[in-house]
Image 1 (cartoon, rainbow, N blue to C red):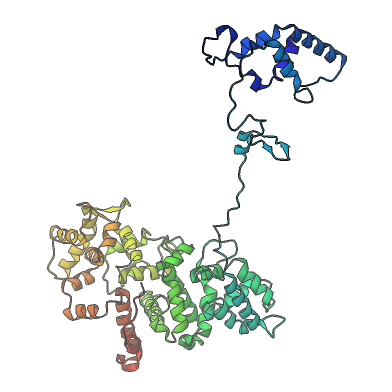
Image 2: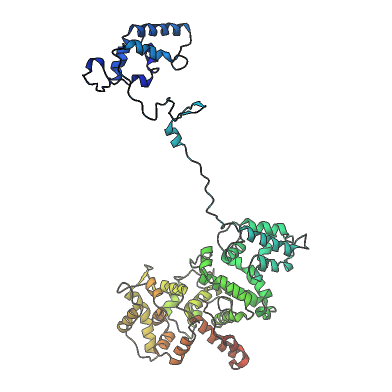
Length: 545
């Protein structure tokens, strides 16, 4: 019987169970009192009609007869049973229906005119279903795609340049493509050409160029990114020194300011090496020989490429490419390399600048404290190592130079320069002053001057940050290990100071190279600078760094 009762509980109409009053508790004025559902269910089960009904249903179930479920053709079942449960005099009124109606009332939102009852799903289920929304792409690894108008204009220009060449363009006719489409200097043409012509066919077709230039979205990339993409090797995320050699080779072959080197291939090679060394000295700030894209973007190398393209006089391009600067560097190296094996030792470097350096600082350089040598022979400095040295020695205002000399003075590599370390290097300076009959300056006096000049954040110690913040940091290093420049600073000529103020755009390296180039030209020709060498410096030039 329990199972039969369970069948009928779910078939009761909820509206009929909302009894408000109980006959036994009715006062003079009706007050709504709700009976518990359990009490109502107990009264219903106690009726004889209910017991007969339950037994009938059990017999039908055992016989396999389909049950007649109330609500599906037996709507009068609940009404008849409940009517017999309560007599006419004892039947309480039904509770008032809400204005919106019961779930199955004519006013219910579950009913629509002419559509019958709408099956409702669980509102929680609907709320838990994710709403799919298409988010437009907002990150592009190679930059956003070009607008349709720009793309069409570019394709039209490509069609124009490749028209009449169904088999493709040779390298000799590829320069206009590089300049007008790629927006790169003309001496990048061979690098772009070889980047596309991977099979060395000698021709680049229109489809090959479009695929290369559009595939990595180079159309809208900035020039630094385009240069980086053209120069770097496939699968690499950085540039090496070798990646710049094809560009320098084409520059030497095509630039009018370098035509005089056509008959001297040895000096062509040395010029290209020097330019590359200068580029990595200033641009590769990590010093690991792997030039990153972010380093290229932060540098002025792209502007230097553009200036080389526009300027016929290569000596006016002071940043990296000046032949006069190369001439000075090479001749200074040749002067101290007495055996001309293209390697120098400590004794050779001691002769630099008319013996201006101390033994202790030269010993630190050859201990490779500031930079590891590229020369495989122990105790020898290569030409590349010398380029780093001379750029650091002659311009102590640049960041690479400050880092170079800071590592030399910082004996214990703890990131600070103490009074003890300053005294270690200044002792030899003091001895040299006494030997040369200069009035000696005691360390106690000079150290106070140096501290006042640098104004460190923490008293008593100097950091690289302190030196980079001070404009007179070069004099700090000269006091410690370069006697000639120390004396020159103490007795500086007012005329030279005025010239420096008149040409504030020139760096210390520019002024040094200018002076040395004129001197070397005079020594070579045996005459004064009126032979035209001074014309290189006849107008103010832009600072390279």
